[in-house]
Image (tube, rainbow, N blue to C red; front, side):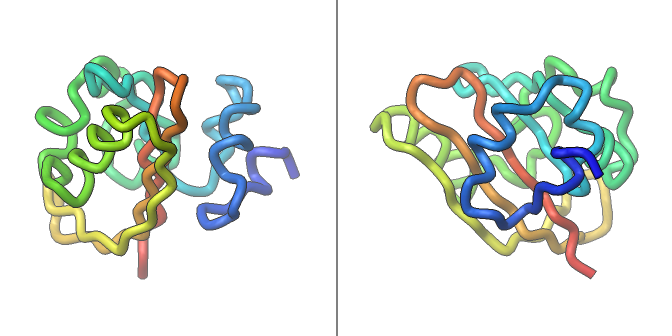
Length: 131
């Protein structure tokens, strides 16, 4: 089992573990990850599990604004605003939320994790689909 395959959505040190991954390892994760520029909200990481679950080609989503073009259902105070608030306050973000995705799909329950640390240009949405 690779280091990436051993990572879990809910482990306490997930952000540091993700930051240690090589680009090729993102696709071995067993949960979805969307990485985006914390200032422009443009997608820069879209792993294979998220692509499979959302049925979207990573090439089609790279560079899109995660909250206004890719996942409009997260463009609210529960998700998008939390990233902006953390960035503006320069405080780390590691928040968990039971959420329902509704954009481009039937309602899909997920365990959503929002990750960012001050000084990093990339923030992450980590998604684990619920049965």
